[in-house]
Image: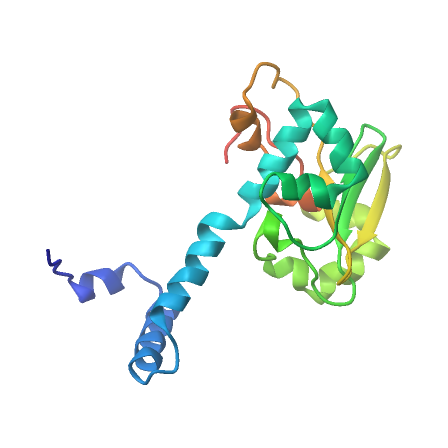
Length: 204
Protein backbone atom coordinates (compact mmCIF):
# COMPACT_ATOMS: atom_id res chain seq x y z
CA UNK A 1 0.00 0.00 0.00
CA UNK A 2 1.31 3.40 -0.91
CA UNK A 3 0.53 6.71 0.69
CA UNK A 4 0.51 10.05 -1.07
CA UNK A 5 1.77 13.00 0.93
CA UNK A 6 1.28 16.65 0.15
CA UNK A 7 4.62 18.00 1.35
CA UNK A 8 3.49 21.58 1.05
CA UNK A 9 0.51 20.92 3.28
CA UNK A 10 2.59 19.05 5.84
CA UNK A 11 5.23 21.78 5.99
CA UNK A 12 2.59 24.47 6.37
CA UNK A 13 1.77 22.94 9.76
CA UNK A 14 5.41 22.92 10.86
CA UNK A 15 7.45 25.76 12.24
CA UNK A 16 10.41 27.11 10.31
CA UNK A 17 12.88 25.30 12.59
CA UNK A 18 11.07 21.96 12.13
CA UNK A 19 11.22 22.34 8.36
CA UNK A 20 14.94 23.14 8.48
CA UNK A 21 15.65 20.17 10.76
CA UNK A 22 13.77 17.80 8.47
CA UNK A 23 15.61 19.14 5.43
CA UNK A 24 18.98 18.71 7.14
CA UNK A 25 18.03 15.20 8.24
CA UNK A 26 17.11 14.31 4.66
CA UNK A 27 20.43 15.59 3.28
CA UNK A 28 22.51 13.83 5.94
CA UNK A 29 20.57 10.59 5.40
CA UNK A 30 21.10 10.72 1.63
CA UNK A 31 24.84 11.21 2.15
CA UNK A 32 24.97 8.27 4.57
CA UNK A 33 26.03 10.30 7.60
CA UNK A 34 23.06 9.27 9.72
CA UNK A 35 20.78 6.25 9.87
CA UNK A 36 17.10 7.27 9.81
CA UNK A 37 16.16 4.06 11.64
CA UNK A 38 18.52 4.92 14.47
CA UNK A 39 17.06 8.42 14.76
CA UNK A 40 13.54 6.99 14.79
CA UNK A 41 14.56 4.60 17.57
CA UNK A 42 15.95 7.45 19.67
CA UNK A 43 12.81 9.54 19.14
CA UNK A 44 10.59 6.59 20.04
CA UNK A 45 12.60 5.99 23.20
CA UNK A 46 12.15 9.54 24.42
CA UNK A 47 8.49 9.62 23.40
CA UNK A 48 7.40 6.30 24.88
CA UNK A 49 10.06 4.68 27.06
CA UNK A 50 11.54 7.51 29.13
CA UNK A 51 10.01 10.71 30.38
CA UNK A 52 7.93 12.24 33.16
CA UNK A 53 5.21 9.60 32.77
CA UNK A 54 7.69 7.11 34.26
CA UNK A 55 8.36 9.28 37.27
CA UNK A 56 4.63 9.90 37.67
CA UNK A 57 4.08 6.17 37.87
CA UNK A 58 6.75 5.91 40.58
CA UNK A 59 5.12 8.70 42.59
CA UNK A 60 1.62 7.29 42.22
CA UNK A 61 2.81 3.88 43.40
CA UNK A 62 4.40 5.49 46.46
CA UNK A 63 1.15 7.32 47.20
CA UNK A 64 -0.94 4.14 47.22
CA UNK A 65 1.57 1.58 48.50
CA UNK A 66 3.17 2.38 51.90
CA UNK A 67 5.67 -0.45 51.53
CA UNK A 68 6.84 0.86 48.17
CA UNK A 69 7.02 4.41 49.54
CA UNK A 70 9.26 3.22 52.37
CA UNK A 71 11.45 1.32 49.89
CA UNK A 72 11.63 4.34 47.57
CA UNK A 73 12.83 6.59 50.38
CA UNK A 74 15.36 4.00 51.58
CA UNK A 75 16.69 2.78 48.21
CA UNK A 76 15.25 4.76 45.33
CA UNK A 77 17.54 3.15 42.77
CA UNK A 78 16.20 -0.35 43.47
CA UNK A 79 12.59 0.74 43.94
CA UNK A 80 12.55 2.65 40.66
CA UNK A 81 14.30 -0.19 38.82
CA UNK A 82 11.63 -2.59 40.09
CA UNK A 83 9.11 -0.71 37.95
CA UNK A 84 11.30 -1.14 34.89
CA UNK A 85 13.30 2.10 34.99
CA UNK A 86 16.92 1.25 35.76
CA UNK A 87 19.50 3.98 35.53
CA UNK A 88 21.67 6.31 37.56
CA UNK A 89 21.95 6.12 41.32
CA UNK A 90 18.76 7.73 42.61
CA UNK A 91 17.70 9.33 45.88
CA UNK A 92 14.06 10.18 46.58
CA UNK A 93 13.25 13.11 48.87
CA UNK A 94 9.74 13.55 50.23
CA UNK A 95 7.79 16.76 50.49
CA UNK A 96 5.75 17.19 53.66
CA UNK A 97 3.61 19.90 55.21
CA UNK A 98 6.72 21.31 56.91
CA UNK A 99 9.40 20.70 54.26
CA UNK A 100 9.58 21.32 50.52
CA UNK A 101 12.41 19.95 48.40
CA UNK A 102 13.81 21.41 45.19
CA UNK A 103 16.44 19.88 42.91
CA UNK A 104 19.17 21.64 40.97
CA UNK A 105 22.50 20.77 39.38
CA UNK A 106 24.83 23.67 40.08
CA UNK A 107 27.75 22.38 38.00
CA UNK A 108 25.98 21.34 34.82
CA UNK A 109 22.57 19.77 34.27
CA UNK A 110 22.64 16.24 35.74
CA UNK A 111 19.11 14.95 35.51
CA UNK A 112 17.27 11.63 36.07
CA UNK A 113 16.34 11.10 32.44
CA UNK A 114 15.00 7.58 33.00
CA UNK A 115 12.12 8.96 35.06
CA UNK A 116 11.89 12.57 33.87
CA UNK A 117 13.07 12.46 30.25
CA UNK A 118 15.03 15.34 28.80
CA UNK A 119 15.70 18.29 31.13
CA UNK A 120 13.76 21.48 30.44
CA UNK A 121 15.73 24.43 29.12
CA UNK A 122 15.29 26.42 32.32
CA UNK A 123 16.79 23.60 34.41
CA UNK A 124 20.04 23.95 32.46
CA UNK A 125 20.13 27.74 32.63
CA UNK A 126 22.75 29.54 34.70
CA UNK A 127 20.03 31.69 36.26
CA UNK A 128 18.14 28.73 37.68
CA UNK A 129 21.28 26.92 38.82
CA UNK A 130 22.46 29.98 40.75
CA UNK A 131 19.17 31.27 42.13
CA UNK A 132 17.84 27.88 43.23
CA UNK A 133 20.64 27.75 45.78
CA UNK A 134 20.69 31.41 46.82
CA UNK A 135 16.98 32.17 46.73
CA UNK A 136 14.92 28.98 46.42
CA UNK A 137 11.79 30.63 47.80
CA UNK A 138 12.03 33.33 45.16
CA UNK A 139 12.51 30.72 42.43
CA UNK A 140 9.41 28.90 43.64
CA UNK A 141 7.42 32.14 43.49
CA UNK A 142 8.59 32.58 39.90
CA UNK A 143 7.10 29.16 39.16
CA UNK A 144 3.85 30.13 40.86
CA UNK A 145 4.48 28.22 44.10
CA UNK A 146 4.04 30.23 47.28
CA UNK A 147 4.74 28.36 50.49
CA UNK A 148 4.11 29.40 54.10
CA UNK A 149 7.06 31.12 55.76
CA UNK A 150 7.19 28.24 58.23
CA UNK A 151 7.90 25.70 55.47
CA UNK A 152 11.54 24.67 55.31
CA UNK A 153 12.95 24.59 51.78
CA UNK A 154 15.71 22.06 51.18
CA UNK A 155 17.84 22.30 48.02
CA UNK A 156 19.42 19.13 46.64
CA UNK A 157 22.36 19.39 44.25
CA UNK A 158 22.48 16.59 41.68
CA UNK A 159 25.81 15.20 40.53
CA UNK A 160 27.06 12.69 38.01
CA UNK A 161 26.88 10.08 40.80
CA UNK A 162 23.53 10.94 42.40
CA UNK A 163 20.25 12.13 40.89
CA UNK A 164 17.26 13.23 42.95
CA UNK A 165 13.54 12.69 42.56
CA UNK A 166 11.09 14.72 44.64
CA UNK A 167 8.14 12.77 46.00
CA UNK A 168 5.48 15.53 46.00
CA UNK A 169 2.64 15.75 48.48
CA UNK A 170 -0.47 13.92 47.36
CA UNK A 171 -3.19 16.32 46.29
CA UNK A 172 -6.28 16.64 48.44
CA UNK A 173 -9.51 15.22 47.11
CA UNK A 174 -7.82 12.19 45.55
CA UNK A 175 -9.18 9.48 47.82
CA UNK A 176 -10.57 6.66 45.73
CA UNK A 177 -8.61 7.50 42.59
CA UNK A 178 -6.81 4.68 40.85
CA UNK A 179 -3.04 4.59 40.59
CA UNK A 180 -3.30 5.53 36.92
CA UNK A 181 -5.57 8.47 37.73
CA UNK A 182 -3.14 9.63 40.42
CA UNK A 183 -0.20 9.41 38.02
CA UNK A 184 -2.00 11.82 35.70
CA UNK A 185 -1.85 14.45 38.46
CA UNK A 186 1.93 14.24 38.85
CA UNK A 187 3.81 16.86 36.87
CA UNK A 188 7.46 16.94 35.85
CA UNK A 189 7.96 20.15 37.83
CA UNK A 190 6.48 18.60 40.96
CA UNK A 191 9.15 15.88 40.75
CA UNK A 192 11.87 18.55 40.45
CA UNK A 193 10.31 20.58 43.24
CA UNK A 194 9.46 23.69 41.24
CA UNK A 195 5.81 22.73 41.12
CA UNK A 196 3.07 20.89 42.98
CA UNK A 197 0.98 17.92 41.98
CA UNK A 198 -2.25 18.91 40.25
CA UNK A 199 -5.63 18.66 41.91
CA UNK A 200 -8.39 16.56 40.33
CA UNK A 201 -10.16 18.53 37.64
CA UNK A 202 -7.37 21.09 37.27
CA UNK A 203 -6.19 21.90 33.71
CA UNK A 204 -3.29 19.81 32.42
